[in-house]
Structures are given as structure tokens and as C-alpha cells.
Image 1 (spheres, rainbow, N blue to C red):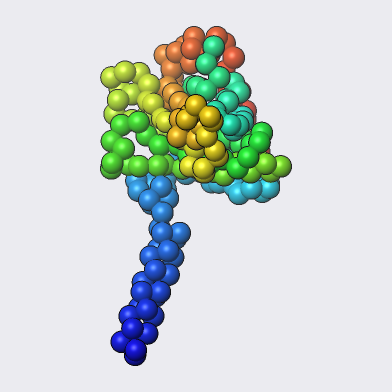
Image 2: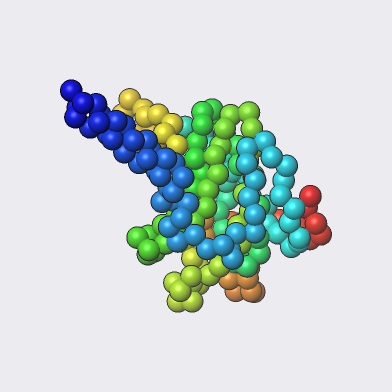
Length: 200
């Protein structure tokens, strides 16, 4: 009887330890995180983080089962284009249920993993600031590609689609005249505003 009690106690301790490690050290927080790229981040219902200009502003609406950017690529509301080396202020909100707005690099997923993210909670606004850096692919193709995925289960439809297919794309172009032209062309002139000064 005593052996069974000790075994049960150790099983419970192991379960709690694994649970704590899973919560504290989630892979999307630590895998490939580059501190130098993170200008700052806010949490739900936080004030906007202080940003020294210039910075770009992109609004993100999360809803079952898509991300909608404003401004966005012409004819593709689930894609946007931003410039590298200019901080991007993402203003994230949910139109229905809780969603997760998490961005990861398209290439080298196994080594870089998720880069940053935010929760989208109904009735709240979340602010995330990120300074995108051009990837190696950008030097050949002219742009970097980032995938957006929902990291919070938000339901499925009767046809089987839903949360697993909720994704979007962020294109990052160089911060030069060529990149500006690419951005303007893809977005039909409706590009994210680049604001100067201090946002507080």
C-alpha cells in the first residue's frame, strides 16, 4: 500500500512539473526568438507601447476563421506588405471569440519557429510592435515572407474547416526605393502609414 502511495505521489509531481514547464517554456516563445528585433509588446487592454518614429501601423481583425489586415494587398485582405527596419505597430482585436495572432518565418521553421505573437480577446485591444529584419531570401527574391497562424483554438465549421486553416501572410520588403515601389504596387497605393514622432 505504501509503495502505491509513493508511486502516485511521484506521478502527480511529474505531471505538475511537465505542466509548469509547458506553460513557462512554450516553444513559440523561445524557439528562435531574437531580442534585438523586438521593439516592445503590450498585453490585452494595455496602453500603446512608446515608439520613437518612424513606425508603420497595421490593423489586424481576427474572426472565425480569418485574419483581416488594414491596409492589405489589393484583393487579398489576409495579406499585407510592410517595410523592413521600420517598426510595425500591429493593433490586434477580435470580432467574435478568442484568437491567437502569432507570426513565424516561412523558411527555416524548425530552427527559427514562431517569432512573436499576441492574444486577440473580444472586447480588448492588443498592441504588438515588431521590427522586421530582411531574411536571406529577401536578397534574392526582394521580399521576406512571414506566416500568421491562429494559436488559440477558435472552433471549426460543419465542413471541417476553421481554426487549423486560419492563417495570413505578411510580406516584408526592403526599406529602399525598390521596396517602396513593390509595396505600393502590391497594395494598389494603400500602404501602411509611416508616422514620425513619438507614439505614447
